[in-house]
Image (tube, rainbow, N blue to C red; front, top):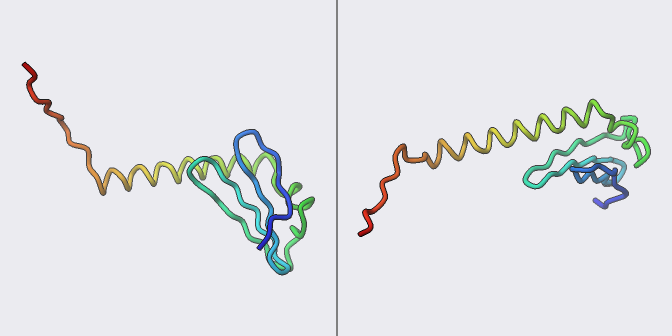
Length: 93
């Protein structure tokens, strides 16, 4: 798999990959990533068609998915490592 291009965005890194005859478009923010893969019969076959496919509606949905991923991550942390209800500090004299 190799990077064949990118799609400019102010807050996301969007990379377009090619592996054999398949194209992948990967969206990344600071902590998470989402990848869409296209087969040989799909209309996304190069960087230009990947740019066309990556419209404002898709970008909005990708951002919502990142928010959901973050909520799922934080909920898993809370289940695995519950926060104590009351933290008691030592008395300092």
